[in-house]
Amino acid sequence: MSPPPETPAVSRRSATAALTGGLMTILYRPWCVWAQAKPLPGFSFVVVSDTHLGRQDQEGAAKQWAKTAQEIDAAVGDFVLHLGDVVDGGREAQYAVYKETRKTIKKPVYEIPGNHDPQELFEKHLRKPVELAFDHQGVRFLLINNSRTDSHDGFVNDKQLGWLGEQCADAAKKDLFLVLCAHVPVHENKSPDRGWYVKPKDGQTELYKLLDRHKDRVLALFHGHFHNGIRGWEDHSPLQEVIFPSALYNQDRKLADQKAPGFYLAEMRPGFVQVTIEKEKMKLQYKPVGVAEAAERTCPLPQLKS
Image (cartoon, rainbow, N blue to C red):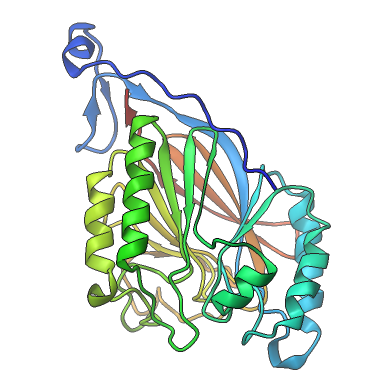
């Protein structure tokens, strides 16, 4: 499966030349006042997560995945991101079931492992190497495995940080925006949240430093893992950190009642999300499987200096 073609790079103009042009584009966020900005491209894709095939050694998860895949195929979107926990508890036979259903989706599907997907099984049945970069419509998507089967917490190791640094530097040369995908959230999320994330000793601090060096082009961090619908934070602005719902089951942790920081939607039914990136925003449409309505959230995004 070949990744979508890369968008040609946009040539840079110096800040001095832009200023003498006499026109300043002022965005709504005070940190970004740039002479000429490269607009975000307009396109849509689908995000699904935590299908957990084989859960409780029952067929329910496989049947739910079949329904979900059918609706994903019909949804608007150029490709699909699966953010991990493809199967439940490393049940190897379920990868064949997953892949057979995946054939019904007539668009590219890119998976990453979750803490229920042993890396050796993921590599055997889905993709090797696990780390993947592909470019689409001016955005580079970076997929890494930051989960382990013996813990709900995640990590970003030195080798991954080096690879991510190289990818970010190359994206800068080519004027590409960036989206990073990893199963376990990087953002701290203590009670009333799950409390599962990449701790500072396991790479959180260094990853944030890397992303901060490229903050004019990093749009978002995408994660699964929580089974709490759409959940996210904007306090590392302009970076958007989003956790996506499970396609199998979600649990309402009453975050609004407990005034948890960040954002969340009331929708908890199993489903997937249609993501649309356009101009200065990212629209998240949460689509529960089997129903017509969708819950939405719009997140602001930066523009890139040209």
